[in-house]
Length: 295
Image (cartoon, rainbow, N blue to C red; front, side):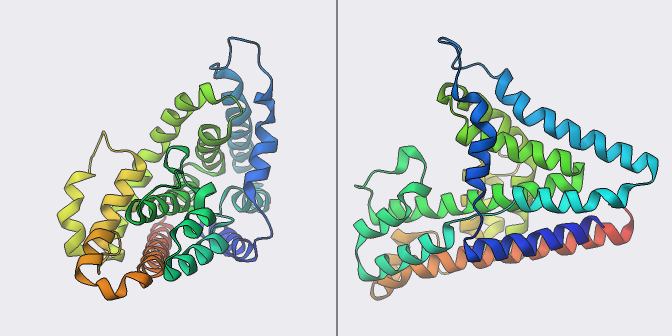
């Protein structure tokens, strides 16, 4: 049933993302509104934020255990489906990337930056970014969003159940959206801990879903890569797994200068396809684990 629940949630979530009918960001902001007011000098306090995420996660874990021991496990699956749909997703990217690709094709880098600026990390939102730097920043943000919006949730759902999936995704939300910015670096460290293993698993999946030979030349930098961030792990491994210099704009412009106007869109399509193939690999792996009785 784990595989069935996940597949239904994944299909529903992808459909919602395409239709742009439900954005999870607003839900997280509403949930984390408890941190909007704190006493002066307590802006870096962490207990309240952890409580907002950990307590509901523990509640789901306890509910699952009780359901299993009382023989009502099937009754919990609809709730798990709903929670997964709420946790997963990368809303808003579809329209932004379409506009970005069209602006890139026209050579209008200012417009391209305008369409994706809100998706970039705060430190990388400068309008003066070069086309190369802008595209690498967009690519990195896209991969991290897909990882946190799908792969991270799926990994912890399969490994630890719906409670762990909520905890992992909730820590990411704390690091990105907790109202008190002074506490976010500490939350980011916690989010990096829960992301460490699934990020490297996805890195290995890139090799299976892409250019294995190219990936093998880069994998030594990220596994174990104890000091590498999630974004670095994904970018390095994806760069090795993609052909045609899809994540090397400088080299692409030297080898194929006449194709430069199409680079932005082609690169994003390559990244999207790599992520989709990687998810297919994960689905097949989960199916094998279910068949073997491990999950």
